[in-house]
Length: 173
Ligand code: GTP
Ligand code: MG
Image (cartoon, rainbow, N blue to C red; front, side, top):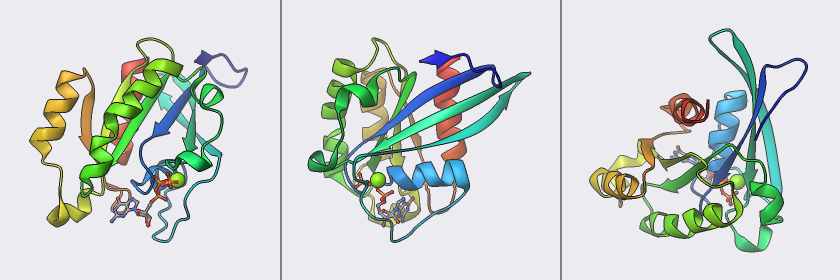
């Protein structure tokens, strides 16, 4: 959903999805507050944060929603996806399990989200590449087959976090 706000040229709602522990909340805190928490707690319900960005002459507010990867802590799926202009599906490059769940997350957003909503696939924890379980080529192939863009990030090192959101925003506007 792209809405008009008096103060902003545009307000864009983005959603973060992916299994528990992949780093969604830390990507959010890194992007909106430049913070990382090595002992962050699992999200319960829904959280969100905003960040104002300037693109050309346009001032935009990105409103980013973050929910629990754990089924039992998730809030109403309908409301979460309603009006989302884009989504980041996050997995952990050190967890094959989290990669195997991507199909399920895709199905969910296609069921509850607006048709054709832009999605970027994010392989997080790039700093732990010595523990990598998901080869880049595998992730890239999957992304290609599903018409998604793929990017690897590290919320810990603040690497590519900005680019991941930027990637998504440029797909939207
Ligand atoms: P849920 O809220 O349960 O769905 O999990 P989440 O996806 O929000 O994960 P969260 O951001 O809470 O991170 C889980 C753990 O991974 C925490 O201990 C983080 O510190 C750690 N973590 C997050 N991002 C990174 C990263 O880029 N590198 C490393 N090494 N650890 C990370
Ligand atoms: Mg979380």
